Image (cartoon, rainbow, N blue to C red; front, top):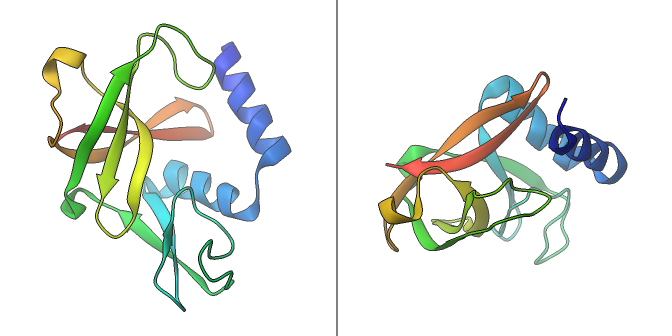
Length: 138
């Protein structure tokens, strides 16, 4: 296991909630990227939460983020170093209808990307038992 995998696994064990555990289970076992949506006010949350950040209700449902949701590249950059993402990974802000703006790794090089480009989610395996997500050009 590389240091990034160790750091990610330890962070999930230390700071994870039931929502983050279910989020990662859905990624790994069901191959689904998901957000949560409040059943009372309709507000979506990403990363998923056990309660609504808007009205504080705990009446939460899960919403799968799929290719049909027409995600759009809102902004992007690259980094030379970091803890969460490995260099020289492209990091982007992705706009997802009815979910909002999320930060995500983006597959591809800077020269292949443009603002407003359609994207779709992809689940990737980090190591045995742990998966993550990124977005790729649609």
